[in-house]
Amino acid sequence: DLADIGVTGLAVMGRNLARNLARHGYTVALHNRSEGRTQELVREFGGEGTFVPARELADFVASLKRPRRAIIMVKAGAGTDAVIDQLAALMEPGDMIVDGGNAHFADTRRREAALREQGIHFVGSGISGGEEGALLGPSIMPGGSKESWEALGPILQDISAKVDGVPCAVHVGPDGAGHFVKMVHNGIEYSDMQLIAESYDLLRQALGVTPAELAEVFRQWNEGELGSYLIEITAEVLEQVDAETGKPFVDVVVDQAEQKGTGRWTVQSALELGVPVTGIAEAVFARALSGHPEQRRAARSLEGPEVSGDGAKELVEDVRQALYASKIVAYAQGFDQMAAASKEYGWDVDLGAMATIWRGGCIIRAKFLDRIRAAYDADPNLPTLLADPTFAAAVNLAQESWRRVVTTAVRIGVPTPGFSSALAYYDGLRRDRLPASLVQGLRDYFGAHTYHRVDKEGSFHTDWSGDRAEHPA
Ligand code: NDP
Picture 1 (cartoon, rainbow, N blue to C red):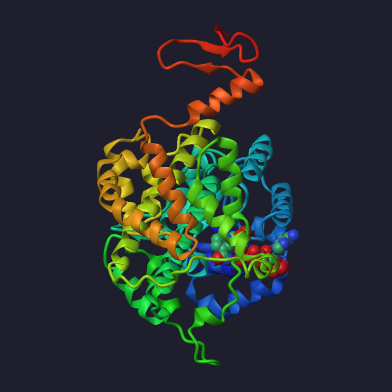
Picture 2 (cartoon, helix red, strand yellow):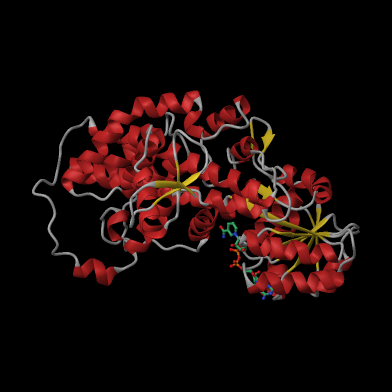
């Protein structure tokens, strides 16, 4: 029997995706560079469905129904290029190659364009949810042609997570759109984690409470508007005790956060698009700061404030509010970035649909995403999430708490770049006049860069080195 779909690259992600497909009744062709993984999958999980294992890639391709549908789940980068080249050489016009790895969207655009020449549909697809998501239902963000979505959509929706019966898989847009939104998803994930880490740090330092006590705080927060996967697992990590030493787990882990690069990519793209994603950028930089132990050692004697603790119990609710408001800002920025990219690359991304497919399966899944979807349902052209009445009300309600939190953090010397930068963004956005007018004046002074006036059309330049009269530019 020919297979409905195939998976090549059977490490954790590919293996679980193949099993997920088989469990949904699809006949799944299997291939991996080293055959051991293929054999292991069939040996351990062969009973879960119908698999067609192949040792050679040519046999794998030959075992697929036409038009062929092959998913690649290999190490991102050169490995992906190699596998695409080998597959494309064996395929025919109309066939589809799905890259489910974490590729950079620019690579996906390049690969899609090259394969289109051959008549092959290349689908760069974000897949979120890690190992468990791949098996039980991930959030799936495919890019590529409309035709490929027609052939792949029903399968991807079948194996994706469902929330209220709605699948967490939707066609994002052409070429690199899927990998782009997956990248922003990961950037937002960085920001969510940074805000959670700041909440933990500030409460622990200010109140002198234990990680286990804070686990209880996060557990309570998870019942309310912050309810989400990351808040839920924060409680579990905080209450974990190290078996060897009996100390809190968070106190025996080296405090240097690592990164695989999707957060950095998000910020690089935002810089190019001119979108201020300060929440994500601060999260990436906070990880970078943590990763410089030599500088941190050298700076340990630098002075901090006299006060250390600040025992007010009300701080817990204030931090909850600051976390929620800062989270709204970070998502507003991430959604701005998707809107800007959609315009720049002609993707026509439906932002409300992105909120919908992130409600389940993925790492940032949260109740909160229902509100984002509702905001875009109410106004698909929302200029910023902060303009949505529900979110505006939430940040208005939170802002006094938010300011107290940042003030407390500054007073006792606990770094909260996520909270502080989100608040600065909020205050910047809501200002009637910004000091950018002075910046424009300085630019015109030293570089004759010209400026616009509030009361007249056109560009102007002041003759700063001469009589200081203004001239139309
Ligand atoms: P890895 O990223 O560890 O990649 C290992 C797989 O890639 C193996 O099957 C390996 O084959 C294959 N491979 C590597 N280089 C080549 C090559 N040159 N030619 C052929 N095959 C090659 O696997 P994961 O399952 O962790 O991830 C797969 C993809 O999914 C990655 O792009 C990752 O970024 C992405 N992803 C991962 C998530 C996760 O939670 N792990 C979540 C979401 C996406 P062999 O067995 O022969 O060495």
